[in-house]
Length: 153
Image 1 (cartoon, one colour):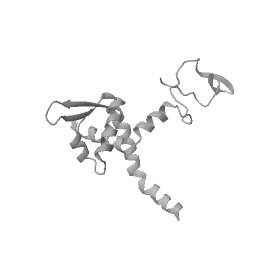
Image 2 (cartoon, helix red, strand yellow):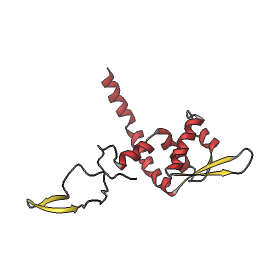
Image 3 (cartoon, helix red, strand yellow):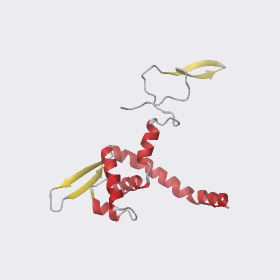
Image 4 (spheres, one colour):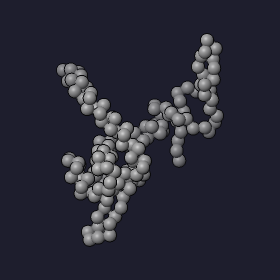
Protein backbone atom coordinates (compact mmCIF):
# COMPACT_ATOMS: atom_id res chain seq x y z
CA UNK A 1 0.00 0.00 0.00
CA UNK A 2 1.34 3.42 -0.93
CA UNK A 3 0.74 6.21 1.52
CA UNK A 4 0.31 9.59 -0.05
CA UNK A 5 1.68 12.67 1.66
CA UNK A 6 -0.32 15.82 1.67
CA UNK A 7 1.29 19.20 1.52
CA UNK A 8 1.74 21.15 4.72
CA UNK A 9 -1.14 23.34 3.59
CA UNK A 10 -4.39 21.93 4.94
CA UNK A 11 -6.73 23.72 2.55
CA UNK A 12 -8.32 21.81 -0.28
CA UNK A 13 -7.30 24.43 -2.79
CA UNK A 14 -4.00 26.16 -3.34
CA UNK A 15 -4.25 29.77 -4.27
CA UNK A 16 -2.06 32.50 -5.57
CA UNK A 17 -2.75 36.17 -5.86
CA UNK A 18 -3.20 38.32 -8.94
CA UNK A 19 -3.65 41.98 -8.16
CA UNK A 20 -4.41 41.14 -4.54
CA UNK A 21 -7.26 38.79 -5.49
CA UNK A 22 -6.92 35.09 -4.66
CA UNK A 23 -6.94 32.80 -7.68
CA UNK A 24 -7.18 29.01 -7.48
CA UNK A 25 -4.08 27.50 -9.06
CA UNK A 26 -4.58 23.91 -8.02
CA UNK A 27 -7.53 22.05 -6.64
CA UNK A 28 -7.38 18.71 -4.89
CA UNK A 29 -10.11 16.32 -4.00
CA UNK A 30 -10.15 13.59 -1.40
CA UNK A 31 -8.23 10.60 -2.73
CA UNK A 32 -6.29 12.58 -5.32
CA UNK A 33 -2.56 12.01 -5.00
CA UNK A 34 -0.23 14.88 -4.42
CA UNK A 35 2.79 14.98 -6.71
CA UNK A 36 4.84 16.51 -3.92
CA UNK A 37 4.80 15.00 -0.48
CA UNK A 38 5.35 16.48 2.93
CA UNK A 39 8.99 15.71 3.65
CA UNK A 40 8.25 16.04 7.34
CA UNK A 41 5.87 13.08 7.30
CA UNK A 42 7.46 9.68 7.95
CA UNK A 43 5.23 8.19 5.22
CA UNK A 44 6.22 10.66 2.50
CA UNK A 45 7.13 8.78 -0.71
CA UNK A 46 10.21 10.97 -1.20
CA UNK A 47 11.49 10.16 2.28
CA UNK A 48 10.69 6.48 1.90
CA UNK A 49 12.59 6.21 -1.39
CA UNK A 50 15.50 8.37 -0.23
CA UNK A 51 15.89 6.04 2.75
CA UNK A 52 16.15 3.13 0.31
CA UNK A 53 18.39 4.68 -2.35
CA UNK A 54 20.40 7.08 -0.20
CA UNK A 55 22.99 4.64 1.09
CA UNK A 56 26.53 4.86 -0.22
CA UNK A 57 26.58 1.28 -1.50
CA UNK A 58 23.32 1.74 -3.43
CA UNK A 59 24.64 4.79 -5.25
CA UNK A 60 27.94 3.02 -5.94
CA UNK A 61 26.21 -0.05 -7.43
CA UNK A 62 24.01 2.16 -9.64
CA UNK A 63 27.04 4.21 -10.74
CA UNK A 64 29.17 1.13 -11.45
CA UNK A 65 26.45 -0.52 -13.53
CA UNK A 66 25.83 2.75 -15.39
CA UNK A 67 29.56 3.27 -16.06
CA UNK A 68 29.63 -0.22 -17.58
CA UNK A 69 27.34 1.06 -20.35
CA UNK A 70 24.38 -0.49 -18.51
CA UNK A 71 25.68 -3.97 -19.40
CA UNK A 72 25.45 -6.98 -17.09
CA UNK A 73 28.10 -7.34 -14.44
CA UNK A 74 28.90 -10.37 -12.34
CA UNK A 75 28.87 -10.28 -8.54
CA UNK A 76 32.67 -10.63 -8.34
CA UNK A 77 33.16 -7.87 -10.91
CA UNK A 78 30.90 -5.55 -8.90
CA UNK A 79 32.72 -6.48 -5.70
CA UNK A 80 36.12 -5.70 -7.25
CA UNK A 81 34.82 -2.33 -8.43
CA UNK A 82 33.70 -1.36 -4.93
CA UNK A 83 36.67 -1.40 -2.55
CA UNK A 84 35.62 -1.55 1.08
CA UNK A 85 32.27 -3.29 0.64
CA UNK A 86 31.97 -6.74 2.16
CA UNK A 87 30.44 -9.62 0.20
CA UNK A 88 27.52 -9.66 2.63
CA UNK A 89 26.85 -5.91 2.36
CA UNK A 90 27.02 -6.04 -1.43
CA UNK A 91 24.66 -9.01 -1.44
CA UNK A 92 22.16 -7.22 0.84
CA UNK A 93 22.40 -4.05 -1.26
CA UNK A 94 21.81 -5.96 -4.50
CA UNK A 95 18.85 -7.82 -2.98
CA UNK A 96 17.26 -4.49 -2.08
CA UNK A 97 17.87 -3.06 -5.55
CA UNK A 98 16.34 -6.16 -7.16
CA UNK A 99 13.36 -6.02 -4.77
CA UNK A 100 12.82 -2.33 -5.60
CA UNK A 101 12.95 -3.00 -9.35
CA UNK A 102 16.11 -0.99 -9.97
CA UNK A 103 18.32 -3.96 -10.88
CA UNK A 104 17.64 -7.26 -12.66
CA UNK A 105 19.34 -10.44 -11.44
CA UNK A 106 20.16 -13.35 -13.75
CA UNK A 107 21.56 -16.67 -12.56
CA UNK A 108 23.58 -18.67 -15.07
CA UNK A 109 23.12 -22.41 -14.70
CA UNK A 110 26.72 -23.46 -14.24
CA UNK A 111 28.91 -24.97 -11.55
CA UNK A 112 29.34 -22.87 -9.56
CA UNK A 113 26.32 -20.77 -10.53
CA UNK A 114 27.19 -17.32 -11.84
CA UNK A 115 25.02 -14.36 -10.97
CA UNK A 116 24.76 -11.25 -13.13
CA UNK A 117 23.18 -7.88 -12.43
CA UNK A 118 21.98 -5.17 -14.77
CA UNK A 119 20.11 -1.90 -14.33
CA UNK A 120 16.44 -1.95 -15.24
CA UNK A 121 14.95 1.03 -17.10
CA UNK A 122 13.88 2.35 -13.67
CA UNK A 123 17.44 1.96 -12.39
CA UNK A 124 18.79 3.66 -15.50
CA UNK A 125 16.47 6.60 -14.83
CA UNK A 126 18.03 6.94 -11.36
CA UNK A 127 21.62 6.97 -12.61
CA UNK A 128 21.55 10.57 -13.88
CA UNK A 129 20.13 12.15 -10.70
CA UNK A 130 22.74 10.25 -8.68
CA UNK A 131 25.45 11.51 -11.05
CA UNK A 132 24.26 15.09 -10.51
CA UNK A 133 24.41 14.55 -6.74
CA UNK A 134 27.90 13.10 -7.09
CA UNK A 135 29.02 16.14 -9.12
CA UNK A 136 27.57 18.47 -6.47
CA UNK A 137 29.36 16.55 -3.70
CA UNK A 138 32.70 16.66 -5.51
CA UNK A 139 32.31 20.39 -6.14
CA UNK A 140 31.40 21.24 -2.54
CA UNK A 141 33.14 18.66 -0.34
CA UNK A 142 36.14 20.87 0.46
CA UNK A 143 33.92 23.78 1.48
CA UNK A 144 31.71 21.59 3.67
CA UNK A 145 34.77 19.93 5.24
CA UNK A 146 36.37 23.30 6.00
CA UNK A 147 33.18 24.52 7.69
CA UNK A 148 33.04 21.28 9.63
CA UNK A 149 36.61 21.74 10.85
CA UNK A 150 35.81 25.31 11.95
CA UNK A 151 32.80 24.13 13.93
CA UNK A 152 34.73 21.37 15.69
CA UNK A 153 37.33 23.77 17.15
